[in-house]
Length: 114
Image (cartoon, rainbow, N blue to C red; front, side, top):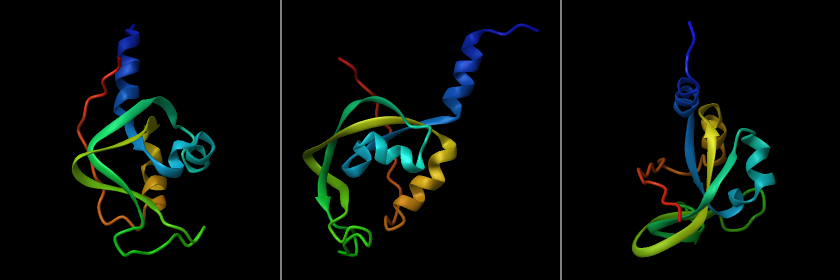
């Protein structure tokens, strides 16, 4: 039975997610170390969040001994970053990268392109 190409696209969409990156995950080489499926989507702005350095425990990175880039809700502020389209198989590697984060923030936002 023949099928349309749109079914393939829909299947691919179900296997991917959009990831808003900031800090070191802005760099292509860095994101691809543990997430080879990452494909650049767009530059993005996350409204009502603020960039800070540190984590909820106030600890520095064990790797580079400096502050860890993090974001938190802050009405009126904004964080600029990029959106990567990634395969869901990369979720576990992202979780390992952010093991110090107490919860995953899921923002249901639309991407507006100009």
